[in-house]
View 1: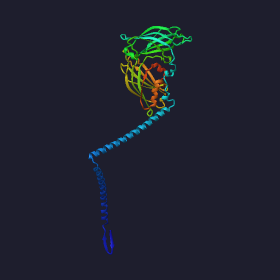
View 2: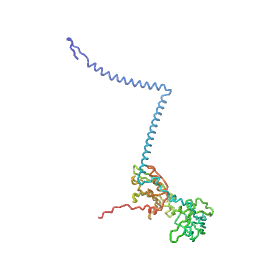
View 3: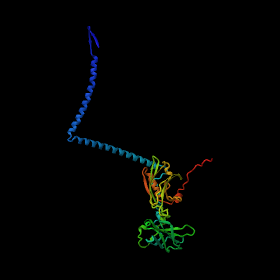
View 4: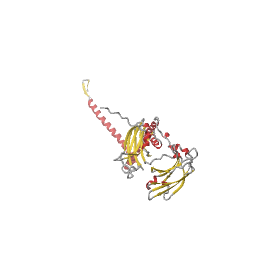
Length: 414
């Protein structure tokens, strides 16, 4: 800058002053930051020096404290997630219960014998019998001696009694006594021999059913006596009297087909029905060698029509197969109340046609334990519910279900 004052020239170094000022400002800022950092470090060091521990111990304690804080935060997050998951499951359970005509545990039907329990105490008479087992021949002899004070089944105050005797391990072989007319105290004195392996004793019962003969109508059951052989000492002859059970507890006897264990799980969010076939035991012998080659079919029926089907692998030469196979089906929340789940066990045969050993079905149309299992699955979504079931004759299950074949469109004619 040039100034003229009284004829003299003056030159002011403004630019240089400005530059010197600008260059000194960053230096002062850096100095300020470094001084602040040194103050903080000095403050931390002064605190650490006051602690009567070596530096490595202080650092270790600090690291442990930091780890515990992180662990506490993770635990809190897990608890929150569990609560959200529980609320979600509760909402799903409420959704299932709100379905029209849906099945819940409060609607589970009791077994037939529970409904007819009021007649259990009705007196129906007594039966005298004897049981003898020959271990060498593996044969059991059942003698029906006599009956006393039988219930009168005819209008004249008498009955026409006779006795049917069989073993539960093979219900196809039944023996019956002569019919005795118009008496409530018949004397039979008839004996019947049955082949019974020692390995089958634990699971076999002797059944003696007393009937009233009718010439022109169905014979009426007066009562029965059941003898579980596992509770009896067969090393000597057993002879005794026993009261007849009520006719209401007398079931139509079927040959034992075996049991099957499987688990059910339904996931409403993804509409998945998961069936896990676990194992079976004491299956019926289907082959001449005393074994079977079992496999399992899992079938779904929708609105009484065949829908979906899957099957397991074949297990060779066994009556107690272990499967542990999982099958998944897509079933919506609206379809689940109209679905029948059919579990059937089959015997594989290379030459002849495969034979059904037994079946069971579950769903809203089922009853007893099958309905309970289905209801438990609906009441506890996302949780596997496992249970054992007795197999039933395939013909009876098919008759109860009365399924229709899938509708097939006719092929176009050429």
